[in-house]
Image (cartoon, rainbow, N blue to C red; front, side):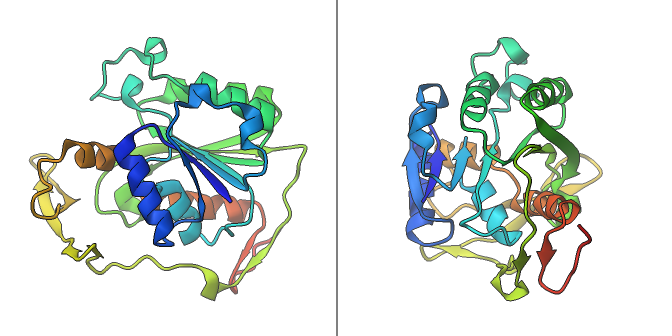
Length: 257
């Protein structure tokens, strides 16, 4: 059983629908603020996804072949304090929730943690890395543009992974046939066709956005949820890079330990 923490009601309902449909792992969706979550309440959960949004991290783990029964924590702390779209208050912003997540990590000691933040939040990542290293985690990070990983937008993000040094990590063979494949074909949801439309990003290039179903174009909740979502392809690529570095074996690809 997994744990999903998401304070936004629209995104939380979306998570429940994805769970019911089997698109992401079975789990409990908690709509409380992460600041109200106690460490002891997380005991017994295999995977914990904080700031879970639309389930992007859980989906990316599936795409990367990460077994649903292998422990891992993920989180995408609110980007508004550090993004151009936010107030720019940085660490003084009330939406700077890393300290709350840090407390849970320090108390629960998950062996592996994946996360991401906007590309301009280098100082935020420096603080997070320092805090994690102080808790005996090894930390690696990489900037990834979604388009470079097969995504349909230019979203640039800083991805990081924290590995608990003292816990170790055993390699595992994940058969190729067990790894879900990301379809490039247009998808449908509840009978509505989804397509991709070109949208000017600036004078020189174009990016793609999903076409919303009829009647939902003015749904600000859905637009906000999409805007906050991580790109699954980019997250998948980062997870796979970590697994390769850690000596995991995917299908027939043997990686030296």
